[in-house]
Length: 268
Image (cartoon, rainbow, N blue to C red; front, side, top):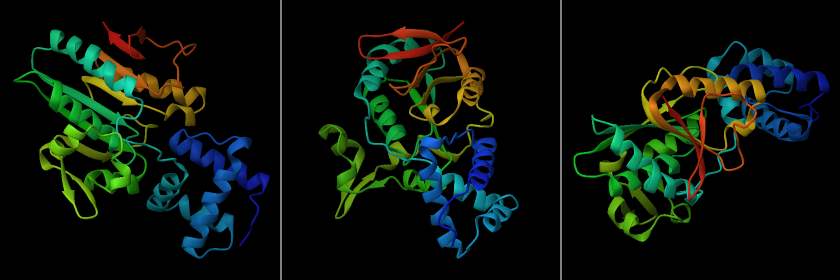
């Protein structure tokens, strides 16, 4: 097997991955792409990168597997606590003042293995007033990660960060880990979605898309944020990663600084 990703092959794969997903590989993370391609070649028992390229441009399933392999699925329950504090103390009260139907619609975009949407669900179960309910769509480009999220089973090492009362209320303890209870699972729909495309969702009240935009270049970031705007309700909120920003992007979102974190809102 070829051990070195040539400049020509790097450009070939980099362009394909960008065109298909918006994920941008630069010279600094070239080694990551080379490593992932080597894994796929070993898996397919192939020797040649050009041969593999012909496969992925004709086989959508294999292309999905490649895109899955180049994404980083680093997550944990209640990651960046400030976001969940702002959700509890600022966003939920604002929505409860505005909404008449008493249903909060949420999209966890780039949900990885499900810790984020389950964290959101637990908080809403705990904090929403009587008569209110919620619906969560959790999406990712990684089919492997989505299967973990849909299963809702986590070994003990993965449930760090879950408050003890939530662990007792929302999980079933099994010999080798913890299983999310059906009362929570039934509120979450896990769905494959590539942020390069419109998700066909509308009137969303909250969008979480954290630590995903950093993988996109400026053009793909702007296009993604514009799709979020179209998908969101007139009074709604957007959470992005704490190292991400919409500054300089010329979007319609309003920057909001709360006591707990910074976020964005659509308020028209």
